[in-house]
Amino acid sequence: MSEKNRDGKRTARERLAVEREKQKSADRRRRTLIVGASVVCVLALAAVIGVLAANAGKDKGGSAGPAVAPSGAQGKDSLAIPVGKDGAKSTLTVWEDFRCPACQAFEAAYRPTLHELTDAGKLRVEYHLVRLIDGNLGGTGSLRAANAAACAQDAGKFRDYHDVLYANQPKETDDAFGDDARLIELAGKVNGLDTPAFRTCVKDGTHNSWVDKSHAAFKAGNFGGTPTVLLNGKNIYQDQTMTPAKLKQMVEDAANG
View 1: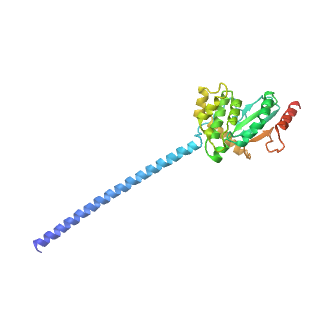
View 2: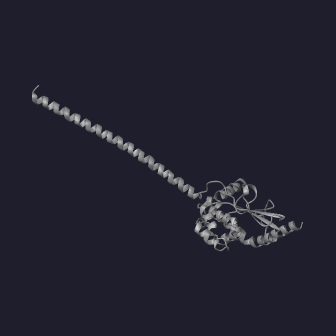
């Protein structure tokens, strides 16, 4: 074999070795990129999951931790906010949602009668707060308003604030009560309620878990919807003949009987 041919074959082998080394280097870089990309994808997926979980918590109002009942709450699991005297012969149990238009209609029609009967010591009203509309339409207004009402109960001003919330109820599809600033603004309509303690209670969602517990009890009771109104255990809201005057007569008969 000539020297020229040997040099040619050696040069070819060297070129092949160089190409193989280049290929190996390229393969190593590709594997590194694939591993790196996989790590990035996993981290990105974890970040997305984290964001979704955080947003899910926000959608639910961030209810977490033990249920803190408002001051003076009574009944099973302290889920009822009482208005009226303990010794009243009649008890009206009301399950309500501050975003519920039907609840507002009931309040507008029956409020004067309820105030008259409770002030006279003839009727005791037990309010149970739920968040039905939040689940149906989204948002947190039912929860936040119920928490704020419970905060008002802590301050001994539940009934007045309760009435203010219904008097200023937004449209059912408007989650205005999901804004703590709005709830605090409305507290200004109740003498002495807008205090640092009330604001902290509203912003911290002190009673959020309690509201959720009340809502769970509502679902467990298999009630048809809000408002659910029971007079001494009997559902009177389903009675198409019921009027404020009829309710008043029933309560007064019980008080006199």
